[in-house]
Length: 310
Image (cartoon, rainbow, N blue to C red; front, side):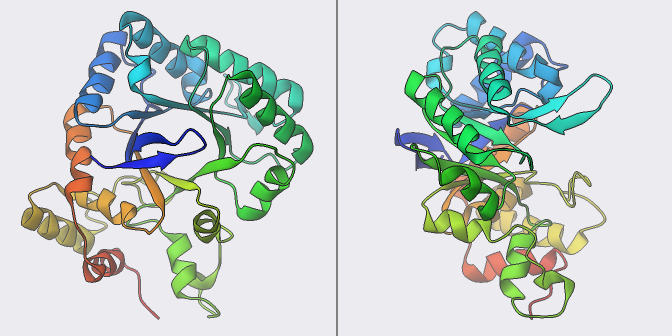
């Protein structure tokens, strides 16, 4: 496993991060086995959110920490807040000052901890007041409830609406990225062209993060489209799978590890968030840092997913 220096605390955080969005139907014992198995592979970073399972995922992880004294201190713990979802399914985003303060405290209570290493604003609230959001994040930093903060799924203009008022730095962002879902790279290659790939859908966030030395965390690392399904083994992506399998065989790793290595090859502080609940898949994914991709192989994977270079 390889590690990056994260945020103001300069924590050493694994490049592969375990996402816990799908643990709401698992037992405390099963989740304990999953996270401790990840730790044995060198994965020391956990990502969760208050909206996952309507708070149940955080509560289960809190029970895991309670049942395993000292385990929490072995992990870089990150959660997200700002999405409100009712049991009926109605969903909206709320970055109002009072709600964020209340939601942050609720996250800590469910997790059974006095602080998290990083807290992300989850999705953008178009109605947010930048000064208010910055005041909340600065206050949480000052109180020691969070050690760093960032955002998820925001473009540079939206990030600046908050960052321009904050006394503490925004250190990370989460964006969707995979071999089969890379609109940021499509726009990069097709600049000033008239085809659909030239549309800049993410506002240049990857370049913004490079400029500001921010960590880029990528989610849905094995998905095509917006939760369209996994491209690994899919008959929708025969050429991509053939290339991943060939490179994996040459380097003694799985196709999944190669797919993650493709993400981590971008020249920034990169983390790939994996959302599997299967320990053997975690173990496969952890080998991504053992993969060395040449520039040619990176572009071969990109084009095997159906991309055409201009």
